[in-house]
Image (cartoon, rainbow, N blue to C red):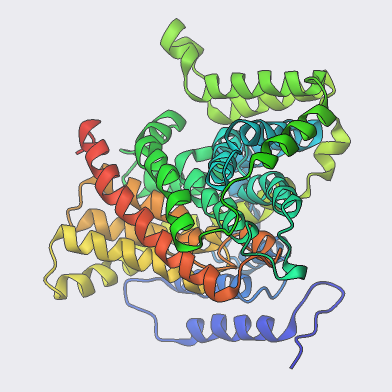
Length: 491
């Protein structure tokens, strides 16, 4: 049976299912510790998450509906004015604007061609062998990750076209059943670099700032991860994962073509076609450097606390430079639909999650989970390990990392900390898991369908590689990450 979609993007069957799930939750007997308003908010929240998972409508449209429901129902306040203010409250969050502005900035990497130039430079350096091309793709990802919070734009929009051009230059095409030559391996490396780099920087994927916010709330603001703290904490496990991933995939899916001297020639030709660095690329490089310096608080190190800037303020400075210089024009900003879309759905989901917390639903849910885990007799180590595993592998049931994090992160953080897990290592492990889970399926994040849709990898191969890489990355972060965090004095 074919699922029909209306001109509005509404898919009736998933929409009805989501509505029924929300109503069912609302009609279920509510716990004594949860108010009527809290139970109604939970029903609306679960219904919204179900609609997102089922893709009942585009996520931005669903977010508008969620804001409307919260405001019109008066679930947060009997005062209509206060109710709409609460429904729109998250749009003042600097973290939400940080991601939207950074996505707009990353448009410059595509528009100027700097992203492609970086990729071809790495291939010209390391492309003598297929394994070297794999590392070139990974290094391209890593280089641009700090300023591309749209992991889909990075992996699917910048690196993937480079990967495709290399594979096709060696006659590796799905249409000719020649994916085994080189294309399958490169497609898998192209994809699995994406979750690793996403875990390494707050600004490498849109949900990371939400994770920062939830961690701060769960710890009573005792742990508020800065851009630098996150980057330093994830540096060593991220680099180890990046070093091992191309080798492991090379062993799992060995390409038929091993030597690729022509790839270096091809990359040099592409660089010749691009010509010398344009004015726009030079400005983009300068903005890239300025943002990294500001996010890393280098002015504070040299000149003192008076020169500290909020990360979102720094992002606005970067975007302003691009606008003043003409590298980006206002039409580019208006046309960056993913940024505005992210702003809307991110704001709605953060708002609902915050209201669930303020209405006491998260506390009730966390206490229920804690009671169940306590009955198993597990100590804090076993309990926190179980929470991380459940959180990561439940992503098989989600098609959105943000929806997954919004639905589960806050409660799992609260339970783990209440069970006695060392705060900093536990929250960092949960933060890493929120990116590692992207490895699992062909619908795990926005990059997945782009690369899977190029048809170089079968469904079975994709899921097998995804599970293997999830286990490997998890071990790296637990072992290498744990030792690194011990050295940093986090526990």
